[in-house]
Image 1 (cartoon, rainbow, N blue to C red):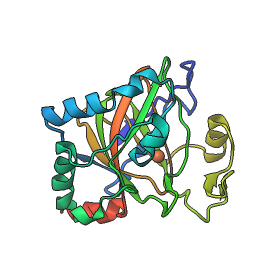
Image 2: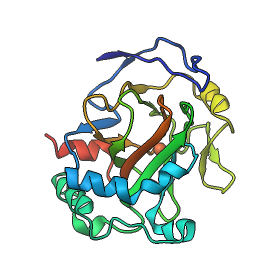
Image 3: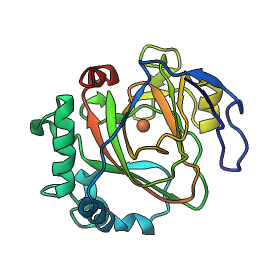
Length: 237
Ligand SMILES: [Fe+2]
């Protein structure tokens, strides 16, 4: 499938070449999902994580494990219908109850900026396990037109991969523009990633990024998975 990328920076100018033709093959680094939270769960998530509206932050992971330290109160999915719904769905992909803990989540990605947020290519890392192979993301408050990008060949061992300031797996370049100039065109783009579904499995163990085109709150529930996209895909066939 040929898609057209239109990557916008904060000021609306193009960061990557405005038109890029990319072939998305069967081994695309994402799998769109049909999962949706029930209305009861959606209401619970919005109420539980309402505090993000008061924050002015770029796209980042909020680990519920550290909520007490960060917020002064425990925020958790434990015992929630939302967690049960996710668990039941992921059983189809060979991920059972025993997999879930403080490390894997569910946690939330959120951002709340008065302007669109551009790329910041990175790897997903967790302190105790290193690279996260993939994530299951379920959007709760989001734009339909956010794009996701992958550089699938940029994995540990690639010349652009080097220790970051914490001596963890990082990318050459400090700013988003620097990283993009080193990386060049992505190998895959999911344009308008969530225009037809609110959930997806995404590859996170190669360089990747998202653009958030709409200002304001964005809230995505995420679970870190120890299965690659190709392993997950096998459960669909
Ligand atoms: Fe990521």
